[in-house]
Image (cartoon, rainbow, N blue to C red; front, top):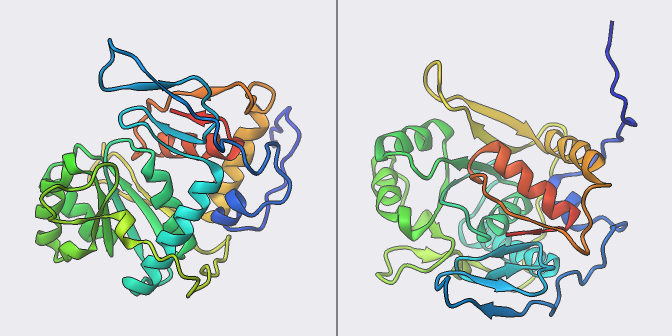
Length: 275
């Protein structure tokens, strides 16, 4: 016989993931959450990291003091999504592979890809060139987002599968050698295209590969509805334990893993700070 949860059943919204994050009219936190409230404090004993006395942004990268508020993340994702459509002729269902260590910019790339009707495919940034090229080929990725620390492997793997180097973009720090462009250069500020239309039940949001424990890694297809439902479940369970006014959480899980990817999206949806 069916076993029912003790929690109240959730109502899954018929909405794509980008709209769920950025277009809902009823939010627990104000629209300007995180705006002009961030003050950096240098700590001499930690020369790489800088800390904030009032972290209310949605994402904060302690390695380079970069942050995203709700407003800035929305605008960045729209402009980058426009760039995908206008400069790269991005098509609905195209795959954006992400091969990078954790970075606050990953959230912008994920949101931009979803805005443009694409599918996000996060990959382990510790993959060898052979492993990466295998998954780029099997996923059919049309573009690759990476980080300077992974750039050599990313370029080599891209050449193996025939992915042009001008379809590789960087998050985090720019490439001082100028081999590939930073994603900021892809942005289109003009309102020349509209957000892609997405069927939340049928269209994919993520293609996430398994670890390959019993064979080659296998791509798991997750629709927009899948992720919206999972986030609503998480928010319902955590609502009494998290408060956007006071709470922040360390994102120590790798964002290429579905656990880390989902956790960060759920946190951003609740609008607690993620460091």
